[in-house]
Image 1 (tube, rainbow over the protein chains, first blue to last red):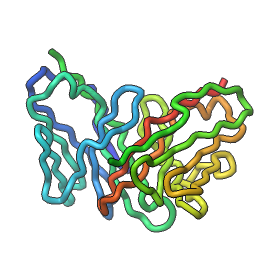
Image 2: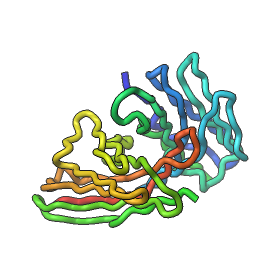
Image 3: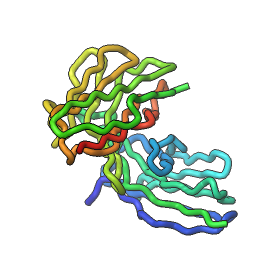
Length: 114
Length: 116
């Protein structure tokens, strides 16, 4: 089983719609969770950290479900500029080397259509 | 805040040559930086953790003698791809951890390496 899994999409969504992504992780000891946005041929940019209690930032809401080992991202009132690849990242916090490195999913490709 | 730069942004080199990539934290000190690699349509894969003043820690399967990492100061880490081959062609991205205890990482713009 892969450490971090995401549906690759693409998700084709009309402008103004609400879209949700899920991401599952295999390491139950994981402590930190993030959503990054990556545009074509660019570096990932931090979109949101995901806290245990869930958090919201404008049109974006992130949730964490530790029991089922998944995190989610909800985008409301989607804009054309939201078109990108959304990467889920997990800090596995294992002992030894690379304790702080992030494990990424392959990303979910989102296309907002006018 | 939390701006990370990388240089060069792209490089084309001949097989067998070595390429050095620089990663700098511009507005904060980073005791730890990370090097990732991303092949087309694949996820970012952690290559190594770069620690200021000490040896880098490499992920399983990453050859430390091929990917030399130096982290001589709190704002600069370098990755040298030695004796590059076409299969090393990839998007190399560094990141630095911010000040938050939650371990957010901020990425440099990446270096696209093409080995002919």
